[in-house]
Length: 237
Image 1 (cartoon, one colour):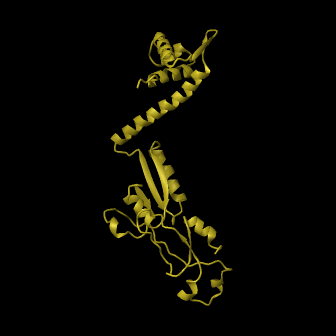
Image 2 (tube, rainbow, N blue to C red):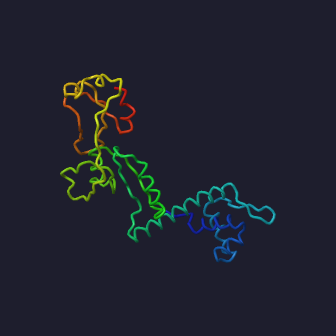
Image 3 (tube, rainbow, N blue to C red):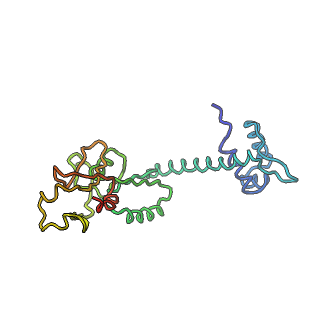
């Protein structure tokens, strides 16, 4: 299929707009003015449109020319991003970095680190995902992410992955003050707790067997997607 528009032609239009005239664009692109005129005429012929109109001694973009200029600049920028991504890979950098953060952790401290990282590599695309329980390990073993923050105890099928302990999270059994369990004599027994509905964060695993912790077998549950939702609903049940 014949390509009617080249990046070189789009760069000529961009230079004409930025410099204000064909002659100034030719100077900026280190070409003779006739080469710029030829490039524009050839582009108009290939597309079957008029890109410039004369007003006195000036050449102004037509509406069609303005559309080509604006969208052409997007293509120029996209081409430069492709070129930079290629150079990054050649230097040993990936073009994209995917991070999973377990729902148990607050995201804000890591956004601060990401902002600092962008000062080093502003062109690297970073994607942040939220996972829960076994979903954190599954995300990295399925290559959906490159790094997991806050994954729980390492499952047996992930021995080949390196990991470092970040912190220890202590879990506390909590009910709102108006909950019936708040009126029970302490310490609470299993029989006291298991008849009341627990709000749990749902394991985000797609293929792994879902995990659950600190639940009794007969206990009814309300399953929510994130820790934030669990906090919202902690007084609802």
